[in-house]
Amino acid sequence: MSNKKAYESLKLWRQNHPGVPLKSATRIKFDAVVTSLEAGRFYSFAEIEELVGLKLVGSRGDRTREIAMNRAKLTAALRAGGRPWITRNGVGIEMAGPENGVSMIGEKVVAAASSVHRAHSFSQAISDIHYNSMTDANKSRMQTIESAFDSFRSVAKQVLLRLTEKL
Image (cartoon, rainbow, N blue to C red; front, top):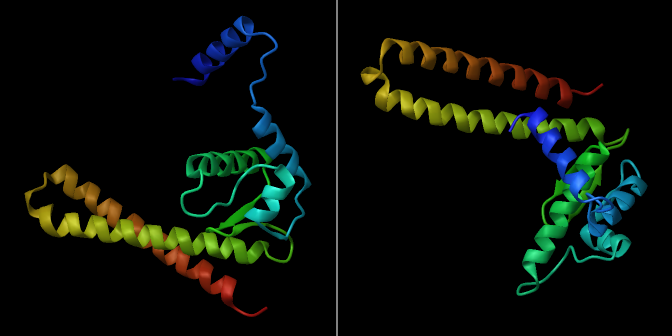
């Protein structure tokens, strides 16, 4: 659906449903909490749960669907708020600040570099198995892809070296 069609659809929906909020009460709570989070601080899910009043942490057998939906709403509120953060898997979130911002960028670069490495390995396996039976156009595309992966990897390596060197 194009942006214009989506806009027209939303406009029509709003005309037919006046007074109905586009955000749920839960999402509004998350938006309010996200705007109050301090930069550079780590928040456990239990702390955020206390601030919002909704379940974000559970033990085995708890209402996992509800917890997952609440975490998704938290993520949506963080994205909409435009404030950078990193999720610490299963523990909480860390808000970016002046002290930890560069290290967070480094973590993202490492994640991107490992993704590129996995994609390069995947393309290499396809190339090893099917390169001889490919058409000339596809062989040319594979060579372009390989050179792009090499460029990504060399740039990522340079960035990581710069981030880890002592100032």
